[in-house]
Image (tube, rainbow, N blue to C red; front, side, top):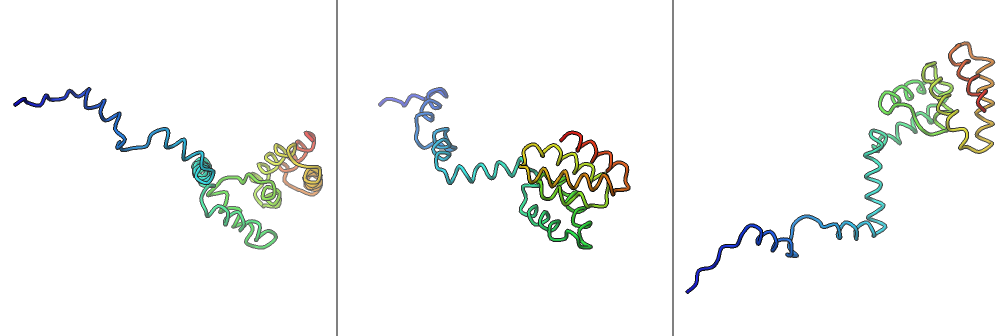
Amino acid sequence: MGEKRKKSWREIDRMRDRSGHRSGSSPDVLERALQDSRLKKMYLEEAEKLFKGPKGRPEHAKDLQRIHDNYGKPGFGKAVKRYIDIYGMPDDWGTLMLLLDYDDSEVVVKAIELLAGMASEKGPVERRGLKSKLNTMKLLCEDYEIVEAAEEALNNF
């Protein structure tokens, strides 16, 4: 009767590598999953949420909509303040245009700068609307910082 020879760790590892019963996922499984368009879309949406930070949360859309719903109403300032405190400045054209009527000059100046940076990507209607708003602000606004920011943005058109 012969004794069974004890296998070395190298032999054990080699057997594990060949085994189809490994735990964990292999690169092939991930590649196949990413070829499925539905799974790939879900994966990319989740990854994008991570990079967006707080703006990737479901409440973000509600807080953004609250600004639009309260525009011209007493709750507008509160909605804008809440949004900026949580998410920072918005990054969409429509909301930034609304912020031009906010009562904090620092926020308005930042909105002007962001809009001016986005203007080249917009169509003629949006650019004309911004230009008109900035001209009005330049003429009617009493805050020097806002007037200066509006003039600078207009000079760069």
